[in-house]
Amino acid sequence: MSARTITTEMPIIITTDDLSDIGYAADTAYLKWVQAVVITHWERFAPAATLASTLWIAVRHKVTYRTAGAAADRIVAKNSIKRLKGVRAIFTTIFYRDSEVLAEVESTWVCIDRTTKQPKALNSEVLSNFHIG
Image 1 (spheres, rainbow, N blue to C red):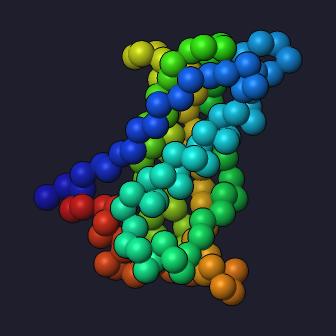
Image 2: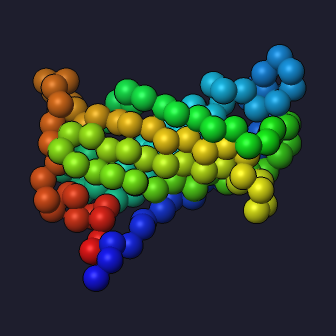
């Protein structure tokens, strides 16, 4: 049996505050949206006790831009976990305007203990919520 990819989608309307000096969606806006959809994805599938005891911090983002997004564009961020092992997770977020891809972001996140701020591996029960095989 193969693993099924679990995704989370988040609608976004690009505002003038999201624009760079050249009038297109700024790098910082994409990273803000990645953070929001990754956290939404995590909160959607993690058990309450795990949410209360852990945090995720981003340690790397690789952004590939395909086409520009402009003010008032209605886009969708579609997020999934590419890999989840130990304390690290690699999330893939793709931004769509209708069927057109604006950008793809592969980001690496580290799970940490909320109290100690040290890396914390997830147990198999939590992992099973994200990868159904």
